[in-house]
Amino acid sequence: MLYPFRWIRRWVIRLALISIAVILGVVALHSVINPPKTFYMRQEAKRLGSVDHIWVPMAEIAPAMARSVVAAEDANFCLHWGFDVDAIRAALEEGSGRGASTLSQQVVKNVYLWHGRNWARKALEAVITPAVEAIWSKRRIIEVYLNVAEFDEGVFGVEAASRHYFGVAPDRLSKLQAARLAAVLPNPKARSASKPSAIIARRARLIMDGAQTIRRDGRADCFED
Image 1: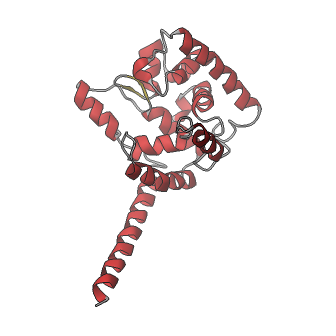
Image 2 (image 1 turned 90 degrees about the horizontal axis):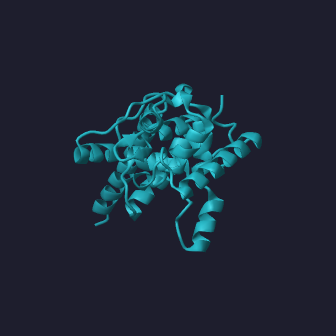
Image 3 (image 1 turned 45 degrees about the vertical axis):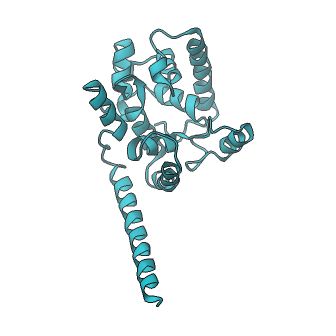
């Protein structure tokens, strides 16, 4: 009578192990090979007809851009293993999830999952994020983030964004331009880096200060040359 249950349990375990192996294999592959266009990029390309996206290596991105996005989105990026416990605790105390998502989690969501709030996605994110943190370098995580983030409608990645807003290559971004690009996140469709509102201009100035702070106190060391 117990045989069917043992058989089911055995196959559930096998499927779980296969799934883990596939996840680890894909994550390991993307530590050296750039991921394809994300699910969201493909959705937007279908909706808009096309999207602007060209991959650029970290060596061709101004260091100020990496520091700015970390300062804006995840100042303790170099100190955590994928989940910022302090930020999560603060968000729970406020009764909101705002500010609790790390750059690592955002990379996992953008590259491997889908947008939206549901338990299935959050569960997969919780499984894949530690794998990304364990296999990729912190510099690689930032590189992928900067290449898949949306900076305007149909504009993905820092290469497309820097040319779209400022007409320069990403390695020529000034500290102010980098801060303004970081300031449009996480709501790029409603914000502009080239024509910032007073609120976005103020946020950009705060990001510039934050970028200098994390450079001075060592919180940028894990992704700097």
